Image (cartoon, rainbow, N blue to C red; front, side):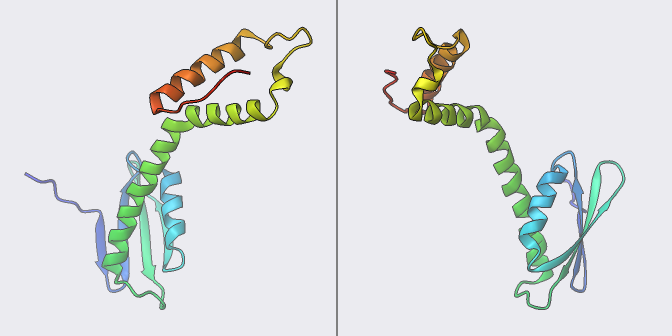
Length: 144
């Protein structure tokens, strides 16, 4: 049996949404709201038990109905949540790639006077980079 959704109520050209903050954190709600600022007036209100109330009121220049706008708002919540999760999961890889770019552009900044790599941590970084590159199928030449 499907659970009934009671998180959307529409009266005239105003939609009232209830969003569970355990599913969609506040930063996701802010990002989603920002996308809709040119089409609707948005009010956020802290609610009880980890919920936030959102009021969407159509602007006069809007071509969508309030129902369509509300449905799109829920869809965008999922888009931003997915984007946020992907950014968290790929953070380490992005850091490695950025470090690799910096190393490639100025490798001598990582060499000490006696031509030894600065520390063991850097060597481990290169090994980790190689492993990550192999995981995602990147072929590089690390002969520095």
